[in-house]
Length: 338
Image 1 (cartoon, rainbow, N blue to C red):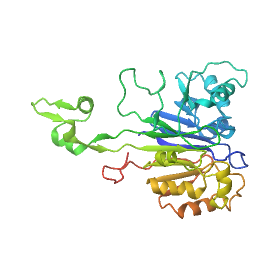
Image 2: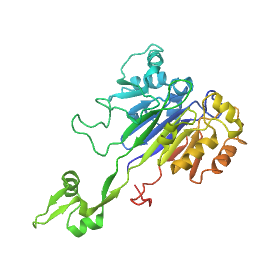
Image 3: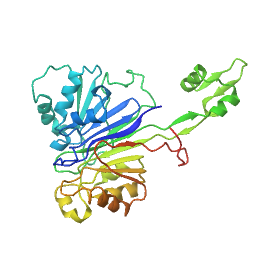
Image 4: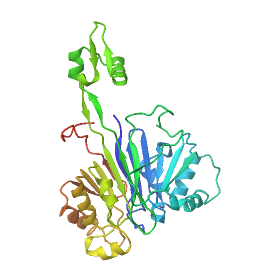
């Protein structure tokens, strides 16, 4: 079965605490594995979580503040040291390229890594900008032969104190074969199903022709959004619209909304309100300020505040949590197994 889950490596904001590492999140989505925002200590957290450098098919930075990027140097050196054979694209706002290059050259090591730097020039008034796949990226389609079911990563500009982007991964809608319909049509499992999926039509030995539409049902794609440091803006709502899983910063409780606005962050209530209006299925809150004590305010106060405005599934993330993407919806809105 395909692996689709979020592995949380760290949940602190600017200052890590005794129980919370700097940011870091790994999204497993079949053969796509994206490391988002590797803050300081990410390499060690990957070891604790059982995530290998060879797992990574992309690194995506939302912006170049240290709690979202200081771990890049160590992770890339790990990619080099482990001899990862495939190309790993590194995506980031274009204005952050000088800091990315400084991090990649932060210490002396033998450079065996294969990276493709992908600076993104994304403006606030842009729609979704498709993030390009790099030649040789693991799981990438061959040139001229794109996989129609490959998930698409897009980015939008957010509203922070430095250039920042949010990301969204969307799996295209497709079809699933109905085993009962296949059997009734006389199609045996195996190569015949593969030909029917590829060609859309299959000629049977008895002369009958079976078309893909006769034996399949719609399969809605799944989606994940990743929204870090930002004030409320149109892009936050657009990124969150209808996603199965929303990973979003929740730096402050709403009693500190003035501080949140001053430093261009979201409160827990704002993040949960976005999830409610966008129809999100599972809300993951993270990026917490060190000002809140555990266990009294984290996670209890954050969960309580979120549930005041959002009635879906809520996770107040802790380091090393594993959060599965919700089961796939059936066409018409009913959930089904993947």
